[in-house]
Amino acid sequence: MGKYENDVAKLLEYVGGKDNIAAVTHCVTRMRFVLNDPSLADEEKIETLASVKGMFTNAGQFQVIIGNDVGTFYNEFTEVSGIEGVSKEQSKKIAKQNQNPL
Image 1 (cartoon, rainbow, N blue to C red):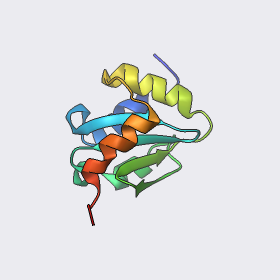
Image 2 (cartoon, rainbow, N blue to C red):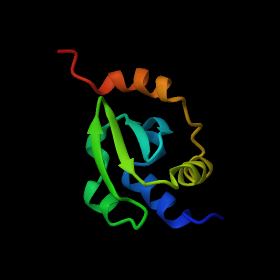
Image 3 (cartoon, rainbow, N blue to C red):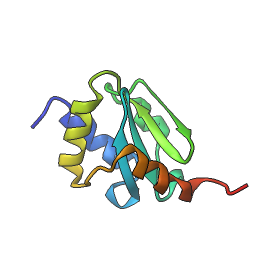
């Protein structure tokens, strides 16, 4: 497998598993998740992963900072998880489910 196999498998588990991911994409340095139930993400465990530089939630997306190698990490993540990634715009649209309408 790839360079990030261990961290990818653990991140999948720590965000609540495949069934908790409504959408996943990435930008220049971050993995962007839309989680069905954001409370299932175990932030303490996610912070223990060597590949993770930090995390935050913004605009309904749970974002995990990976750094410049996020493209490789993302490709391994989608391969291991079996989740087909979406575009950044699709992710934003799906993320509206996690936002307060007010």
